[in-house]
Length: 398
Image (cartoon, rainbow, N blue to C red; front, side, top):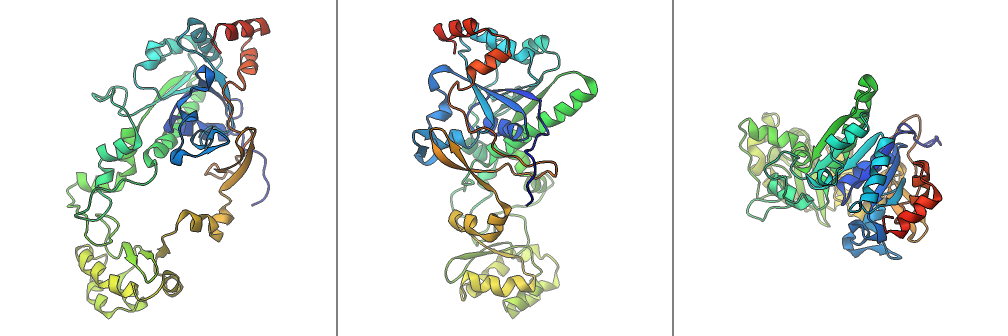
């Protein structure tokens, strides 16, 4: 891909990030990658939860990889919001901000005096974006919102895996990340609306709605009367016709997607499939077809099957490990990994911003910040003098 300037479609947009865990920070990072000036508000003393937890207990020179993966291109301001002086600083920041993003539990920002009703009076043009587990008005608004909990509650964990086996959650925080994308999309839509009206507005995302939106297809079938049952075979969904599923090979597994059964019968070859090909997309034959295919796929290696099936137009793919995925020429050509240099963590590999725009490419302009790294420069931009900043430090606000 040719060299392009840094992506700057949101240049000049000032974002205050009162976010935590993954959904909020990841959503804000999308905005930062597109050029927004994002200020991360965090408590003094490096006590932010994300800085002290990491998946797989992975820390680089003491720096949490969980924090690193969702905080690039942002500045850090430490602020004790429990002190009136800290709240006064926050309100001054609000006066000059374009966007405020927060994902505390419902009611927390209101108790701090930073809810929509209060801050919209201070800044009528402010876009106020919130994310929570179940939604601001939900009867479950006070329950914790966490990815695994939402996979279970929304039914997502119930539709994966084989019949007769325990429910199977997705092995990554898929709801957090989808919710983050929806949150960022809502902010972008709000910026367009404000450009038309000149007025600020609220944006609300929830993990519950994100979880259900992920299941748009299968949930719609359920709501309209489909009978959806998991299979004891390797069929990969409750609603696709065969051969849609995972099949054992001599050395691993292969997936076969939506391919006409007649073409598959000839490619395997497996004449016993031919009778089922008389009906296009023969949903009712799911189980029978899967049981016919499985013994045949075990006769060759995954690579041998791919070499045989793909040229014949059969939709097939290997099931890669992460090591195999990132070593694959297609993934390397996509250039999805960027290595940055962090002042403490050292070299860090991060996934790039996932969109390509012809006007520029998202790049790491700033490594993920240390706690309060930019406090002084941010406060000076808001008109605080060095003496005032010194006093705020002395009383423990920063």
